[in-house]
Length: 245
Image (cartoon, rainbow, N blue to C red; front, top):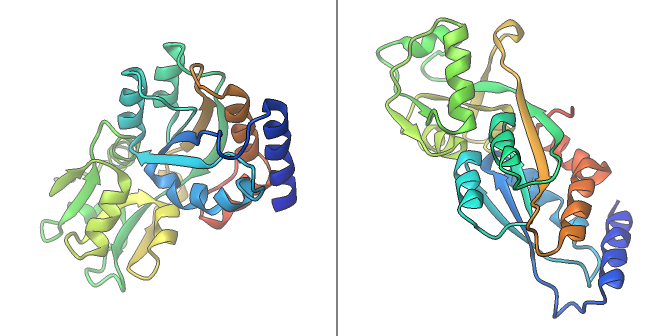
């Protein structure tokens, strides 16, 4: 896997004739929930000593979209939902997006589940401190869709700027529960436990990726997207708890 990634990058380097010193990092704007898998396959991508380094910027998809719309320099954009990607695509800011992963929503609770939370309806209990992602970010929108579908009214203690912030509140004991992605639980398995949402109540969570049209290194950006869609990317995503499309 590493040799294949190295060969891909080496080909790009030779084609461009750039030395390692002359190469600029490939700037990847990605949803915060992609932190673990994207960092995990960085070694595969940069296995060749002359490969392009990666410069990640992780945040809520909606936050990153605003930055791109305002002219932030980026080469690749990866979102945790289709509407946000469609928003920048409709403005002509990205090339054709690709679906590359799926996820599931779960209820994150303190390790050992001391409050005995067993289902979505429990989140309406007045004795619980529940946090959600803000409605303008994908995780918040998915959570609201999930709760509305189950006809559960929740008064969150706070609305966080991204899904990782929700997970952190629960992990630190500042909240009893929060709705996060199943992959987030994988990254904090020693601090939080998941409460599974029944399949009949689940909402579809999809991840999309595309090169930026104004990328300073479009060939490398397209190669990175191909890499994410390939064996190394798929393996890292699965190991991090994501589902493949």
